[in-house]
Image (cartoon, rainbow, N blue to C red):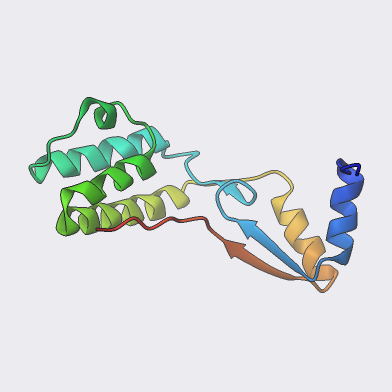
Length: 129
C-alpha cells in the first residue's frame, strides 16, 4: 500500500471535509510571539516559590510552562489549581500579543466560502491532583 503525501492530498481532504478544526496555537497564531513561553515559565516558578514550593533543578531549568504546570500536580491540590489559574491568566495575556499565522485568515475565509464549519480547538491537557 502506497501512502499519499503532499499538497494534492491536503487539497483532496479539504475538498471532501465538512468541518475544519484548527488548533489556536500554531495553525491560527503564534500565541507566545510577544510573551515568550520561557518568560511564562519563569512567572510560574516565581509564583510557586513565593507559595513555599521547593523546585528541583529540572523544573528550575524548564522553559515549557506546561511542564511547570504538570510538575505542580505533585505539590498538592491548592498549588496545582493556583498554577492552573496563573497559567490561564498568563496565556490570556500572551494571546493579546499573538502573531497571526501566515495564510490562517485565508484558510478560514475560504473554508467558510465553501460552506464548511470552522472550529478552533486546543490540546490542553489538564493535570490536576
